[in-house]
Image 1 (cartoon, helix red, strand yellow):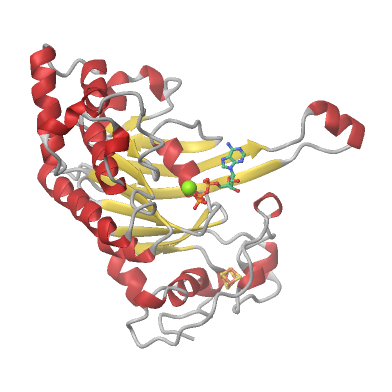
Image 2 (image 1 turned 60 degrees about the vertical axis):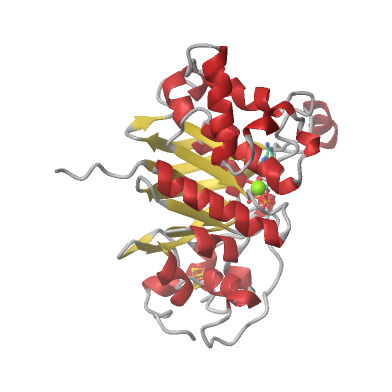
Length: 340
Ligand SMILES: Nc1ncnc2c1ncn2[C@@H]1O[C@H](COP(=O)(O)OP(=O)(O)OP(=O)(O)O)[C@@H](O)[C@H]1O
Ligand code: SF4
Ligand SMILES: [Mg+2]
């Protein structure tokens, strides 16, 4: 059988925001328009049934990329393809009902994403009705009960309101609502970062069980490396809108190549179990409106050569076995597989 190819692909995905002051203010103050590049040339693939995680500091463009991948935000450049269909080829995704049903998103704050005035049963029934997935009211009610039980709640919970549940239970309700349209691909933007640590692992375990049982494909977004390590098959590291390294989970954690990936791992004490000497995080994240020239990481990088690193944006270099790195030092052989 021929290789079906990746289930989800992005190619050169980018998004620029116009963050200028209003026209009149600009005229009076004689200011130019100001643009912010939140994502630039982002390319990765997710095979069906696998989890790809995007990790990066606050403001690195994780949510912007997530919104483009579910069709909530139009890219300024590049493409998103899901099961061979280009999401934005025929206008916005809103018009593509079949594809919309197959892609769902779970957000960080489960309370903000649930309508407080609706009963939980109605919240979960809404996508079932919208996509016409059940024939009548009785079948919808049965399906809602099934979904609640599938996420570890009771079918009787459908008559309650969101405020009657704990944070972890509310995230389970969001998962049930996401599952209601029978999706194949779920984008999870920091799904557990608002929850207590003890509850986090329960929700992550549920998500893993659902993935196995339903064959789901996940894009998982997190700034928490322990979450990423637990959930992901493949990881992409973002810095100021650019992917600096993508690698299978073990390769990334055992032998990170990009200096920024190394710094991130060194800054995560819980993960420092490999005999590496922990380094402190060097410097602040630069202003995203005025990103450093060349390699955006150069002001913080101990391998900065002062010339090419400052003047030229590094291209994505395919290192084989699912790993790609964008770094002049790696390309030139100055940064090897071993630690400095
Ligand atoms: N609608 C918008 N208009 C203008 N700028 C935006 C908009 N959305 C995001 N940005 C900017 O784009 C950059 C990336 O934002 P994004 O929300 O994607 O980051 P993130 O990695 O999800 O961060 P966090 O971890 O804090 O959620 C930030 O500098 C942000 O201020
Ligand atoms: S390109 Fe240069 S500055 Fe950027 S991470 Fe690599 S060595 Fe450091
Ligand atoms: Mg975000």
